Image (tube, rainbow, N blue to C red; front, side, top):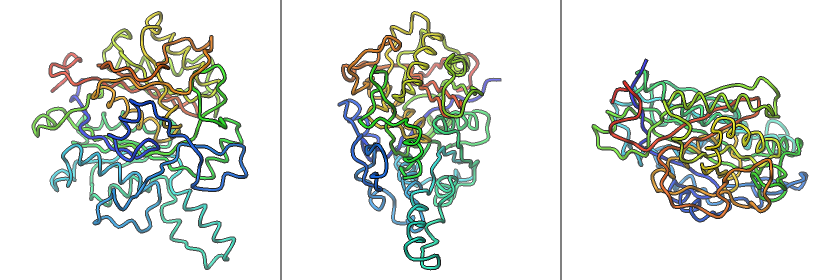
Length: 418
């Protein structure tokens, strides 16, 4: 059953490279690294001290005055700021009242208001229970960001929160596509948010999965990932609605695939079967052959296991064509933003299509014989990809691949409604 074609008309983000999509695009083109010392909390007890922290985040400047910030967590403020940017970018702010009934929200994440909860428990221990500010726990739930967006904007369409670790943001985009395609919503606000916090930082340090230096995806000397924080939001709508109102179209969601390894909580399946099936499912959903893909935005975390496994998966799906397709890890610049990473890399994929460039993998120095693809290590390439495949392969074996395409009036899918 073919449904409506679904396009992206608005992008919004706050991340370590910038507090809007334009700043992000410029930093990617320059190959700028957003990884540095962490100042949100004391990293003294940990073996590493760096991360991709948002440095110039002023929620008061990014969020309209009619939306009070009181009791909103850092995650909620990041998500709301990215949402307002995306709606303005789409020409949908303020959202017309008649659309609120048919506008939904899907947000992926994992940490929610943990940063504020950590502050609360510090106060609890220092001041005693009754004197601690219990209001800091108001946004502890990971669902609070989707709640904040829906409540502040008075949206009455579908609303949900996804917690599939590092694939949550990309899965949100795929599910939002389906809700529009089959008539459950007219507009979807989809993406992910992940703030940095001590709990997450401690967890990844305990796993010894963090590189003390900025991460080096696909490099022979890679030692692990660099944690980051971000919010990234996309506005999706049916093509006919976007054309009717003359909206700018960044691209089209051509297809996506979701699979599970059913293998291990933190380690990828070395056979890469789940990753292979996710990419094949996305290609089948899009009605594409592997050779039609112009750029692969890799999951590329910088861990020894992930990068080798993903490389094997790409070779399995694309065969000899794998050696002719640029593959890069933008986590080398943004850090690994966990539940937001798939959405952030969806924004990056669409910026690459819209602005005509392929972002690089930075900090790469030593080739690894097990990672032998074209990782765009010399800097950004200013060529315009038409079709971008973006991978998100998460803890728990949660795999998602999303394919974006440059908008073409005639479409690519036989029988698709316009």
